[in-house]
Amino acid sequence: MAVDWGFAGQVGGIGFGFVFAVLVILAVVIWLVGLVLTKIGAGKGETEDKKKGD
Image 1: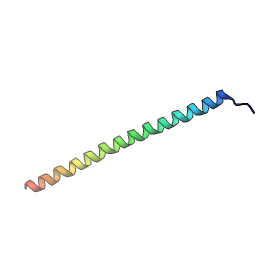
Image 2 (image 1 turned 90 degrees about the vertical axis):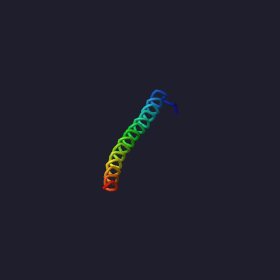
Image 3 (image 1 turned 180 degrees about the horizontal axis):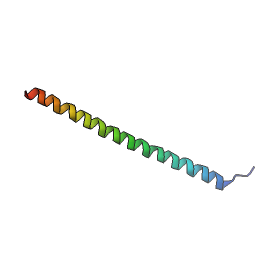
Image 4 (image 1 turned 60 degrees about the horizontal axis):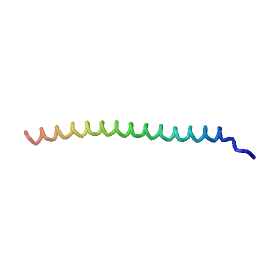
């Protein structure tokens, strides 16, 4: 039973690359969600300040 090291390297490389691609996608999605939540929170904070000022 011989090991095909070329194929093993290909499978390992594709798996390794796929994991990093998924992590990058998740990081971008989390960053975008943070931006959206920050803008939503900033909008609510401004309206509360205006209500307190009146």
